[in-house]
Image 1 (cartoon, one colour):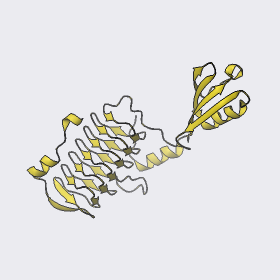
Image 2: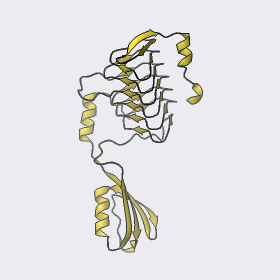
Image 3: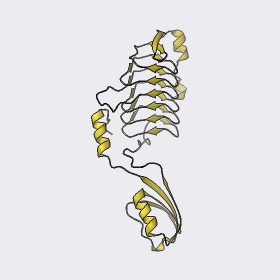
Image 4: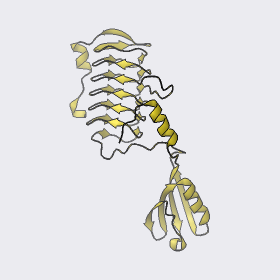
Length: 235
């Protein structure tokens, strides 16, 4: 899949996308006299069927056959959605249940995406990088290799205004829990962002920053390295 990282290209892609409200219909009844619409997928036999398709078609199916359907239950989880989720079936990474990853996201080999993480269109996650629980990567955010983005951290996305640069986090960076990286910020290789920090300016390589707004508190040393070690066994 072609990677989308240009803000204007992403905006056009969303504008042109067919907005969908997919649904899943559980239905019981007399299906002998019912013709299933070609536009839906159907599973089941005898008096029970599961129909998967656009909700307008499923609602019409219920209305048209209400005299022979004894029970129905319709489930939807989105409304007029512009973008599908990323097909993760062939990605060489560990992706845990509950992660939400939109299409046109790039995930490197042996990356780890934990429960509740949200990754928006155009984002890039490097090899062996962990995106921890409930972290958010906004549109076009770029994370390098061997990084750890802590639980609840926010890496700001940039689609509006389109002239803004996306957040870029270089290799071997640790971002602590609940930290916020604002739009346009670049974090250099090996830097450490303390938990709860709000980063408003670029961070130099191997710097340790903390606070709101974040400021350099020291340079990375052996003690810092031991506290921020990436564990290969988790990849």
